[in-house]
Picture 1: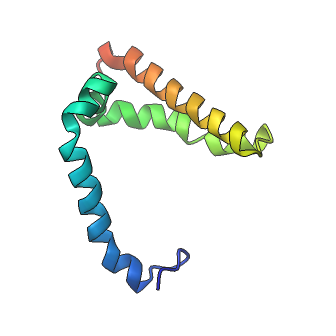
Picture 2: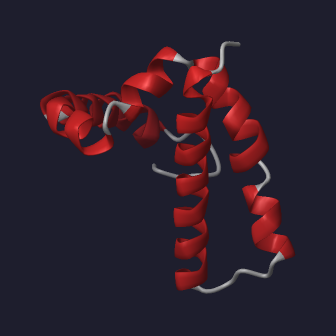
Length: 100
C-alpha cells in the first residue's frame, strides 16, 4: 500500500497528514527558526528566482559529483551534504544585494 515506485493508495491517503504535520511544526517553531537561521528562510522565500539559480549551479550537479568523486560511505556523504548546504547558504548570502 506504500510502494515508492508507484503512487500507491496509502501514500495518497497519508500525504495530507504529512503536509499538515510539517506545516504545523514549522508554524509552531517559526520564531525559533528565524532566530536560528537569521532570516535565511525568509530571504529564500522572498527571492525564489535567486534560489533557483543557486540550485542550478550547486544542488543539481551534486549527485554527479558524488558519483565522480566516488563518495560511498555514510560519513563521506554526510560531509558532502554539509558542504553543499554551506555553499548554498554562503552564495545566497552573497547574492542578497544583487538585483535580478
